[in-house]
Amino acid sequence: MSTDRINLLGDYEFFGEFFPDKNTKEGRFPGVIKYTPYTGLKLEYSLSNEKSPQECERLFGILSNGKLCTLIGPFNLSSGTNYVGEFFIRTGTHSFPYAIFGDFTEELDLIEYCDFNFNGMQEFMHPQNFLHQYEFKEEITGKAESHGWEVQIRNKATFLRADKNLSNLIHSKDDDALNEFKYHFDSIREKYPQASFLLRKTLEFFFRLSKESDVTTNDIILGVIKVTSLFSILIAKPIFPEEIILKFLDEKIKSCSVLFGLGLEQRTFELAQENVSHFYTPLNLREINFETTLGKWFEIADAYKVLSISYRYETGMRTLNEAYGDIILYATLIEDINKSLGGVPKEKYEKPFNEYASSRMRSFFCGIFSKYNSDSIGDNIATLRNELAHIGRPKVLMNKLTTQEYIRIGDILRLIVTAHLFRQLEISLELIHTYMDKEIPR
Image 1 (spheres, rainbow, N blue to C red):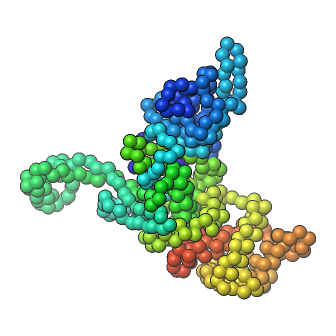
Image 2: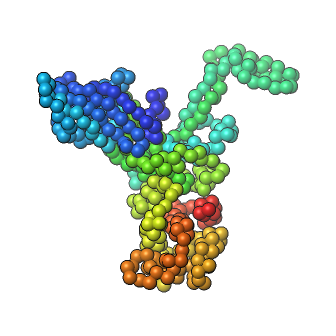
């Protein structure tokens, strides 16, 4: 992907000289780009040149490490603090959406494709402790297409030049077998003197995203977010792109890295950084049909923004008010699911549960209410939703539940909405039940 890796989940500070026109040296000023996943991108600047810009759509920069960059605005540098003395100076800090590192780019420069990965991706694709079992392939290992978009699974590897030293890297307690291996290897080298033998050191998976029609940097970033949003739901944890590399149609422009503001809370960042296990994720690559799942997702992703955001920006913590909001939100979504399933109004909560809930989840959910009443699942959801949503309604059930029970109810309702999404992505009900049972609130 890149030798100078820029990780969106890292912290960065770049000092450089910036200017509004890449073709002239006029108006140049010093500044520092500061980035964290929490605060996003900020430019701290100091302008003493009367020709320095006040407003512009983008800034070009030459960093102290010798790299070129392009900052995407708009920028208004006229509102900084002013110092008037022998020199007129404007200083300040300006936030901006994203930055491109590696070259100067213009708004109309189009993207051929971008390569990207995300936190937890390597383990999701293949268990890293068994990576030696995976065969390195330079060709595409998976592909999904939808609405003009194409997502490819690719991998890259690093190698150690072995050649005549390969026998030093192979050991066996069976001396006869080892000697025979060395003999045959030496024979192969003599027969093919031009051949080079490499020993694989590392292997890494990444996605390549492209579109049939002309696509800008902003378009491709939105496409990356759409893809990673799905994997946040599949893995059931905050997922964000780690490294994004842009390849432009104009071959004169070098491949570039991208940073853009994520705006994460500390707890979301910590959850994103937690290790992922291929065997314990709710779903992994082996269990889904990549072509179908990604293809369908591009068709319906916009309808599931609320759900994907809830997974991407999960904190693992809820206040009582947040739990109230979750229940109202997901109960409303379940009503719409009931309609799509052909259910009548009186079964607006019951039918989706009957359609999707695993027996373990049903038992868990019923257990929350059984200590208070013997009503059905649908009646309890309806009662609780109405008590929460309507002022003046008697709070019979609402005043009995504990905060932890509110949180668990909201999480389970979210799982029903997730299950409906998975069925639209043609994920089997068996896998959905496995997913649910792994994610039932503890």
